[in-house]
Length: 364
Length: 189
Image 1 (cartoon, rainbow over the protein chains, first blue to last red):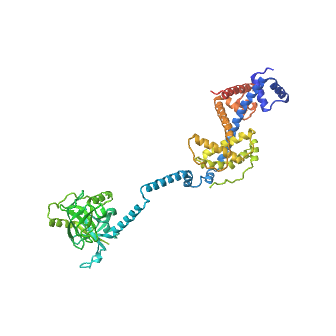
Image 2: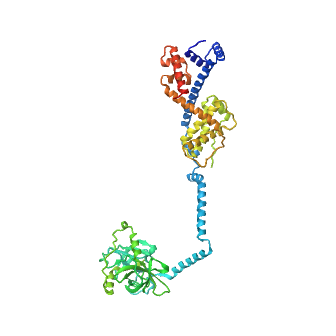
Image 3: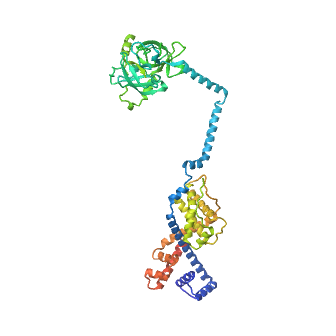
């Protein structure tokens, strides 16, 4: 039975769709059995049609699912099943093993280091407690030279200040330096010059590590000073150098003279010199000057039970501390004097020149 | 911490029957019931909701093919099957993007589904080849093939649609188109 390919294709399609009449179907089936070549054509055709219907089914299924998906409230679902609530918890879950390993490594490293440096051995422990006792003894033996003004028998005008110390001008426009321990915890601070004029001042900078405080005179009655006669020494001074200081252990300026007796302060404190000079409560914050009138330090304490062992913060630390003051936080520029007009003068003249620049600091 | 997702779960046998009958109602219930589980899994394992959608829809296609090919045996819960397929698909995809995941957060038991996925991959490939072949077929062949073989329209309808006066012309055209498709599909360049 010869049929054109077109006819055949139509017949197969009709067969696959079940559109053949009963007699046609019987003929068709018979031919498939009789003629293998005919059968192969049908199988090939059917194969392609199956692929097409698979393709169609998948497209339909996907589009149906997309319709369903659109109808879902994905946001609400997300909240319902949201990743175990907390991101921290998730991270913890995810990285707990890493964390545990890191922690163990750290623990081993730390204990290993401590073991190898002998932290756990007894001798070191003894040293540590010794050191603590040393610190306590520093506290005991080094008392700051704050004069308790109330302790004094009041003579003349009553000084209402609670504590006092000494301070000196850093610049002619009203910046004054003193010890931090002098103004520590102050409600208000006044500075009083050698003429007995008191000006209100405020703390603009403190440096407890070096026991330094910078004040600014804010009183409208204050008029700018003349050019400062002293400069600040940038290098360290030698042991044996003659020095002097001016301070307010009482209501008048008192001059004191001595020498640098050690390049370090108490218990090797490199911030300070040890100075052999008579100082008393109230001298704290006073300038320590050398013969040429350079400020080499600031008196800040003395050792009790030991004669002639006072301490002064080195001027290098004062300069360091002043450098650390953010300049843009200041109303007026703080320019340190670099000129020295005291050099070569006799001590009497030096004292006279210095007098207006040294203040009693009164703390309330 | 693992939340159970509760909703009225259709019986597995009900779903199988629905798939065989192309029931939209069952597809809807299947989707609503099991999508949240997959969403939860994907969200908790480095993915977003679009990833979840892709993976879940693919798993439904796998399920449909499996059920329709007649070799679906209810030896595991339907839920477990879907979860396992999605899990496998998602981990594969993560791997392909070289996004590794250390600890997989699981929300259900799972079974090996490698065989099913192998079959699926083959089908997937054929799907893509067919898609390409159809796109290369050109008009009017593409529409004739789609209308007749995919939408199951009668030759009568196709004649009217394309304005063929003679049904023999339409038959000739269909024959030519099918020959072209056969060539494109079985021996793609």
